[in-house]
Image 1 (cartoon, helix red, strand yellow):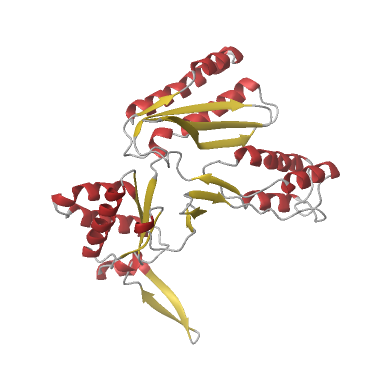
Image 2: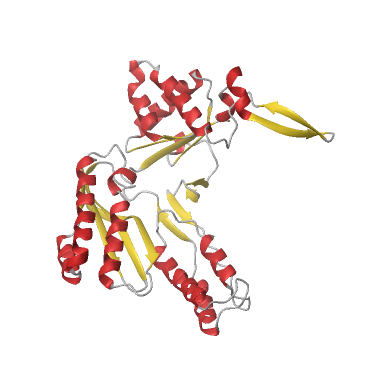
Length: 349
């Protein structure tokens, strides 16, 4: 949510952690040389082994534990914002980010972990070409926006099968759910195709093919701001509104951030989730499913930056009353449990 962001990467992080001689037998591998199998052992942590991320993380934490107290602020930031070999820092203060970059570089170089690929929407802190990638999306650092790529190639005249439909749907990488209103229609078409009981490579009915061609013709790349508060220098308070709803087509949940700052209030979508509704399911049951999805989003711990302290989770009371009226007594307890989990999550975090 902060307007400024800096990212970096540990260069060849796994290969900089050595394995003790007595542990190398656990990392044996075979190599064919002139039709003879030769046994080799890794002397460094191999990338891709199940234990490798833990071993790298433990090594990084060991070095962070041995830093002087004068670097405590940066050390805590690295503990909270380092994921495997990637580190990041968000702030509304450019000088704070500049200090973080300098001290983080010193800390990791002292542990023989060189840092490279410093990227930021702050020009003086950026060392990589623009645009770049973040979270699998194209990041335009000058406009500070993320672009969600969509295969917008026309499908008119091409065979439409369950295989081609699923390939198109799975090709859209959208972990934040920004495009879920659009993707729901594609998922609905796939469900209808699945109900036709045809083979993977058999064409779907003419009705579904027409729906599919119309839907794919409307697909476009989506560009959204990386931060809702990118033009704000001082955030006073953040309210997180979690909404859940359902229909016979889909169940969904969304988290909206309402940010209070010195000049007013702004709001925007943080994340959303959706799933196609099951057949022959009551509306009360579908409403409970959507509320369960909202609970599992855990907005306070997964979305909000740790630097923002004044965060409040809100669930609209009117929506609770409307849902309560729709729901039979047998399903009210599950809904109450879901709302209680949301409240406990907010209190705990």
